[in-house]
Amino acid sequence: MIFDYIIVGAGLAGSVLAERIANKLDKKVLIIEKRGHIGGNCYDHYDENGILVHKYGPHIFNTDSKEIWNYLSKFTEWYLYKHEVLGFIDGKNVPIPFNLNTLKELLPESKARELKEKLVDKFGYNVKIPILELKEVEDEDLKRLTDFIYQKIFLNYTVKQWGMKPEELDPSVTGRVPVFISNDNRYFQNSYQGMPKEGYTKIFEKMLNNKNIKILLNTDFNEVIDADFTTNKIDLFGEEFKGKVIFTGKIDEFFNYEFGELPYRSLRFEFENEDLEYFQEVGTVNYPNNYDFTRITEFKHLTGQKKHDTTIVKEYPQNYDMKIKSKEIPYYPIPKKENLELYDRYKEKTQNFDNIIFVGRLAEYRYYSMSDVIESALNIFRNDIDE
Ligand code: UDP
Image (cartoon, rainbow, N blue to C red; front, side):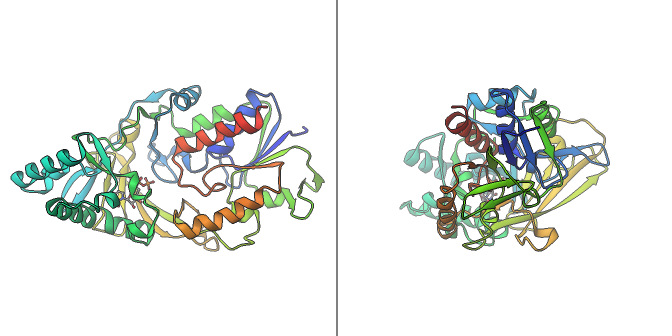
């Protein structure tokens, strides 16, 4: 088969583009995937106890885009799950993000009422405020409250998760879970949220099940394609490739780490099966101030699966180190100024290659949600491919 496109990576970005190119344009695609399976970090499978688990950590789909929801709905039906998270704070489980219910649970009743009034007066009801913005308030009571929230919910969790304090990271990081002046305990307020009824892997299987798509698993792109940085030409199996390449791997790796490595944060997951119907009340419980893990997720809450036993996963953040097997997965780009500047240097180099498109969490070095990745891939398809 003569390929029109080579796609490096069978994760969300690569699979969405492969699907669009194969189905809409009827062009031929070769996907090169390092792992032994498709689906990237969204990959899920049944564990040895028959429980559907997410191998690379919990993924809960949420979006405000009707277009993205409809797009994914072509490949799956949905279990309309609304994610709820509790935080173990001062000996009890309270709603996260911090909201008016959390306030009531953690503070004496009259104090909570007084602070609620002050918050609503100052900001309004149903309003979200990132913790680092809330730090600017002048009112002494609200200042004390902000400090309390910062200390109990954000500081230790962030240090555990990133090895840094909230102020050392781009404000958008802690801004993902803003203080919410509301009684809504859902983790996401997006218009569309849910879990694929048969799991994420099935979505990828459907997307990629097309005669125009061939997939090479267990293959590092370096074994198959060769980019010449002086002529800007690409070889596939030693012969010049005249089509286009879509690269969804690490952008610094593509350029042989010429300007140095882009930093990432990694995770170690511990899965445990418990002989209980349910281990905890909700999908995820965060532990900002206790233990070495950040959170425990119980898959049955997410998927709605019924079973007499249950599987949970504990997330242990760790440094990323591509030379150590247990630390080699780059889960999170680290959003802070100098890292984004380093990324910009790599991005500039991509302009030399008009036959390569860089897309996705690793190639764009962005702390992307699943919806963000799909949006980026569909935009690229619309603007640069479907011409
Ligand atoms: N965060 C926190 N305490 C919490 C929940 C989140 O400090 O209880 C901060 C922390 O810095 C975290 C960030 O908010 O990395 C984003 O949280 P989110 O749940 O979106 O992280 P993800 O699910 O992407 O790992």
